Image (cartoon, rainbow, N blue to C red; front, side):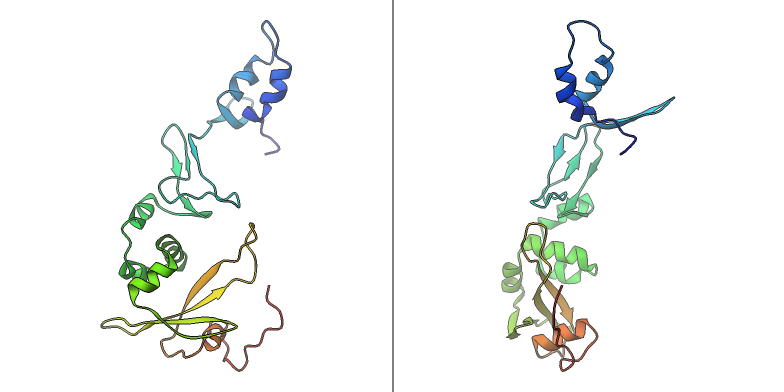
Length: 202
């Protein structure tokens, strides 16, 4: 960005220096009407039109569940959910999610997006999950699956706050034989429940 000119960000001072007749600033003034950052070089310039759509969450991350989070007039677009890039086809699939499709997703980050969009409470209700144990480390949930081993997840709250001050809830898949929330959380760290005793979490 040290080599970039400001484009639309130059508008305030360009307006203050606007002349009645032709001016050496006419070129930068025309650019700032249509472009943001731009890069002039000796024989070429990199100029980009301003986006026609820009959606961000409270933390300033690209975020939109109904279409592109960032889109330009030429059709180029980026889709994202809470800052994480996703495919447009994935966003379109969110509208038709089922508990079965969520369980089948192997990518943990995409599965988290699916659960956030679908809603944890709704997912647990629709999938027949039941809490089997809770303590200070989290809540252990169990979902019986036809023709497969039960899905067991531990619900934990991230000790590190998000930029907006909230704490994100995560659902971590653990072995089906897990019996307590502490055992589940310990397993995610490769420990037994008797060895999991953090003094401080960050």
